[in-house]
Structures are given as C-alpha cells and as structure tokens.
Image 1 (spheres, rainbow, N blue to C red):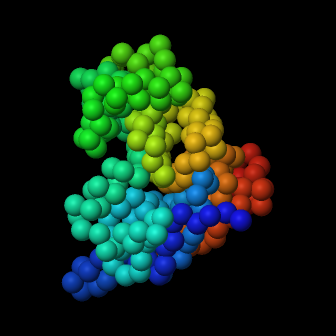
Image 2: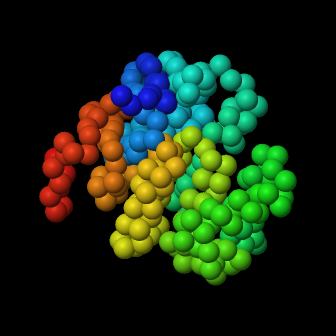
Image 3: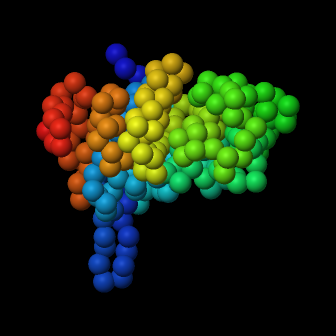
Length: 240
C-alpha cells in the first residue's frame, strides 16, 4: 500500500475584496503518495497555482490543514516554513531562475551553502547531480552558454541537490520546444522513480500525462476529478 506523504484536508483560500469574498480554492481534500508523480491540470484561474503554492509552503490556507510527513504546515512560523522549504522541497520553474553570472556548479551549490553545507561538499554534490542529469561536460558553463533544455536540467539538479522529499515543478516545459520538453518530462519521471522523490507538477502540457502516476484536474477552485494514468484514454488532440 502506498505511503501518504501529503494530506490536504478541507483547504480553502479566500480573498476578501471588501464587497465580496473570492474563493481561489474551495474545500480541497487530497492525499499525495510518497514517490509518485502527480500532475495538477486546469485552465488559468482554476486554482491550480494556488494549490501548488500551498503544498510548497509558499502560501497559507484560509481554512483547513496541510500536513507533509506528519508536519502541519499551518502551525509553522514564517521562519520555520522557510527552513522546511529549504530542507524538504525543491523547485523547478518555467523561467529556470538561474543566476546569470554563475556557472552550473555554482547555481546548484548556492542553495546548499545557504542551508549550511560547506562549500567543498556543496560543489562535490553539485558535480554529482549535474552529471546525473546529463550535464557532466557543461557544468562550468554559465546559463547564457547553455540551451533552454540544458538550463532546465541545471534547475532540476538544483532542485534535487539537497535530496528533498518533494519536487514542485511549475510549468517546467513552458519555455521549451516539443522535443526538449519531452526530454525534461521523461527526466523528471525517471528521477522520481530512481530517487523515490514525490514530483508534483502544475502544468497545461498534456505530454505530462504519459509519465504521471495520477492526474488531478481542478476547475473553479475545486477538485474536478483525480485519475490514474492507466484509466485515461489519450488520442491525438484529445484527452478523455
């Protein structure tokens, strides 16, 4: 039986605009399993990003609770949340968010050093994980010397360097061409299986469906449906 890593219970996010209350998320109930690849899909404004940020301890729910490995995020102070993020969560962004003046090793090592690693150890770990994501020959290059796909591989290495329990990937293929996007999707899925990391991706990209274990569809701030990959029928141009 799969082990539950993240428990979301009755979570809502409400914005008070004075004359009305707007629900970005409403009464969300969800269990996410350790080591699974979950894609969160939905149109813009559906609540997809709001849920993503809640799981990543970047925002707090208005009501309800979120537990990660038994830790209730709602109860943590801002300082404790920052520590929790640095220790347990890795992030992959659409825009890569690499430091342009630093090479790949330094981009991967920087968060480790901020988390208390000695520089020599952080750089050695950076070399190991960059080699694992296929950049063994490019690790001394700066972002402007790398292709978009290579930059995203650096971002994935950075997200995985601290051996997090969770990797959150926000539209990780949004700035990539079709072929490169498929390579990145397959790499994330492969690393999820190999390292036992839970990967949660907020995406519009239907190519993600092929590598996901489950897909959560969100509509109007609510869970529309949650399906296993094998239960989804995919045809060219359509998903049902």
